[in-house]
Image (cartoon, rainbow, N blue to C red; front, top):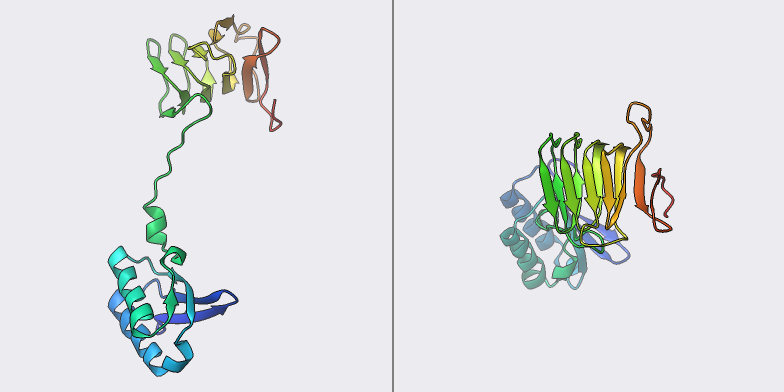
Length: 212
């Protein structure tokens, strides 16, 4: 879009798209919009505006544009079809985790003596060192090395799992099942692994894209 063109209309099969210059101030955009609509009243009357794109608009600014389009020049603008990046950014999505409930993220390496418990899923962005312990009613995901104690499904949930970039815990529990890792000096996995209950025992497998 040329810098002198604050406003442009793009035709689509579903209606017009109103393109607003991202770097222009709102008053200049509004002034040019009115000028262009005045010059082509007959052409724009009854036309449907599918969306407003380009510049980020506040709610009040959007309302002003809609008022100009709908009420002053007889065009049709459906509010639900406005695609405002500002409005999209104001939305906050809440991740409810898996079946076990909400998920807590801990961005830290857990040192010896640290203990974290949560009634949902736990995601540790860091390592869990020997002497540290994490317990969750849901799943435990470690974006690092798991060397401490991890207890997933602590409320008896046998569908829970534990996964880590390196899974070498001092103790691993899922529900009421317990497993220990081989000597970490000997066993040093080179790939992410996942631990879960299968055939009444905890099994550890490479974490691949295929679903278990």
